[in-house]
Amino acid sequence: MSEPVFVTSRENALLKELRKLSTDNTAYRKAGRFWIEGDHLCSAALHRGLQPAALVVSESFWPLAPVEYARAAIKTIVIPDALFRELSGLESPAKVGFVLDLPLDTAVQPNAATVILDRVQDAGNVGSILRSAGAFGFRQVLALKGTAALWSPKVLRAGMGAHFGLSLVEGLELSDLDGLSVPLVVTSSHQGDLVQKLALPHPCAWAMGHEGQGVSAELMARASIFARIGQPGGEESLNVAAAAAICLHASSLKLA
Image (cartoon, rainbow, N blue to C red; front, side):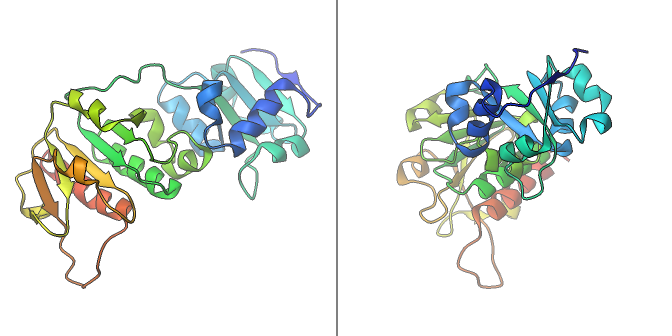
């Protein structure tokens, strides 16, 4: 366990970087690392075996910080509470956070149970879909260009730790999906059988589309199976995150 370093200047290079990582949705791409805060996300990262590049903790919380946080981190930075508030994206700052390196392995896994995000733009929806993917045994998420940044602060918070158990690849073109060997399943309100009646293959790749436009025609043309979600209540459509949860759960039932 490294000795803590006490930093009091807001001009410190690490704090400048963290302020950017906490507010800029795509800053992590240039930095090669990302920022998470709060006990839930920090504990989830450690549970998955990640080693933080740095533990950053407020002065008031430092005496209370779990010892395993400091043991796991390469270095520990203690800063005044006022400076921590500047890093926080929460209304009530959590007072503890990790700096973590982005995963290096971002190759598409041909045979993995997969979720494809086709221009899903709302960070909350993306995070929720990642949670459903993790919960229902889908270990790869492929995000086509136009999808919300997967490692952005809002998606990380909405994902609630799901990121750390998934293989995430973003910024993909449609042609990058040529490497997938599993059948593609697409939801449609106009064609296909009810999802609960389908003989769903496993593994497979579920495509989830743009909140307003749905799955693109080009991606739809690649589908092997079309699935329809029945809505006896008469609503026109479902939120994409809700639809994803239903579809991925239906796939998981095939494994039970």
